[in-house]
Image 1 (spheres, one colour):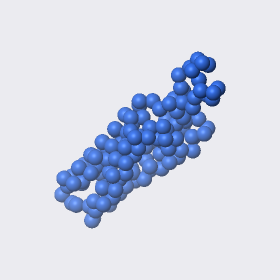
Image 2 (cartoon, one colour):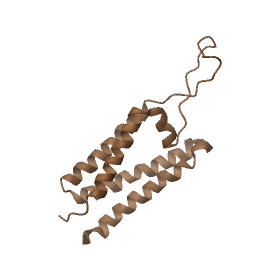
Image 3 (cartoon, one colour):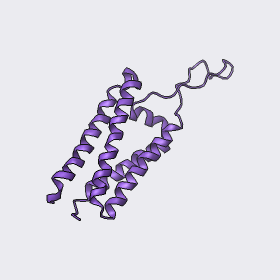
Image 4 (spheres, one colour):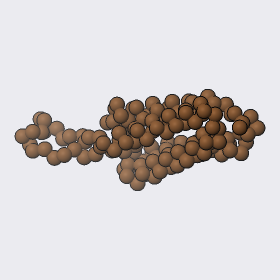
Length: 143
């Protein structure tokens, strides 16, 4: 088994765990960072609405699922690298890069005009991660 430089994998894993924790600890802010509008707030009667100010929306519990997804991706990358499974790290990173493409498509179609440009960041993550995986698979063996 050929060992490749591990620092990049550890960095990506830690970043993914940090994104996951952000989803869980600050779900409202994660919507804007990710590129989706908040879910519509439930309608309240005029008696319970505060000073006639409309509600801005609320986060869906699904954002916590996204956080768990991100954190487990990062943890898996770190553990696979620590155990020395370089080929598994390469394959897994290539697979999770597809999440960036899927996220970009969801934001493009459902984020509205306000967030549509955020889709480019997700597609760029897909290109970077899949490119890195391809590099590891075909050229990284020289290391």
